[in-house]
Length: 120
Image 1 (cartoon, one colour):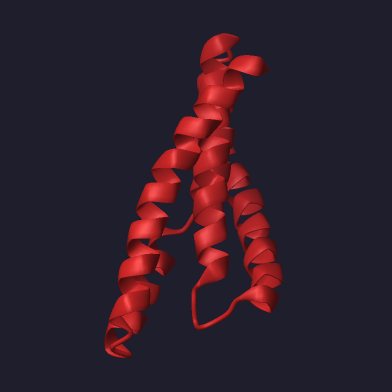
Image 2 (cartoon, rainbow, N blue to C red):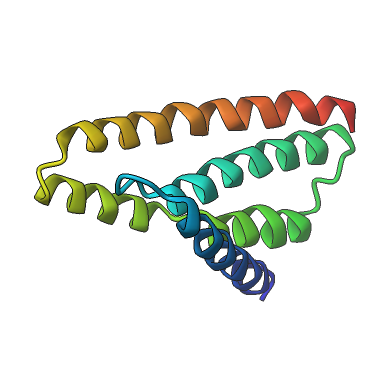
C-alpha cells in the first residue's frame, strides 16, 4: 500500500517535471527524463543519508519514500526507450552524450545527496 501511494505521488511529480522541462528542451535532448532521473538520484541520496543518520530506518518510511516515491519519480524504461529512438534516428552523438551524462550525473547526484545529508 505504501509503495503504491509513494509511487503514485512520484509519478505525478515525474509528469509535472517532464511537462515543464519539455518547454526548454533543445536539439532533441530528452531533458525531462534526464532531469527526473538526476533529481531522483539526488533525492534518493539525501533520503538514504538522512534516514541512516537519524535512524529513520523504519521499513514503512523506506517503502513509502525510497521504493515508492523515488521509484515512481524516476524512469529507466523511458530512458531506455529514448535511447532506442536516438539510435533509430542515427543520432549517435546525442545517444552517447545522453547515456553517459545520465549515468555519470546520476551517480554524482546520489553522492552529492549523501554528502549534503550530513548537514541535515
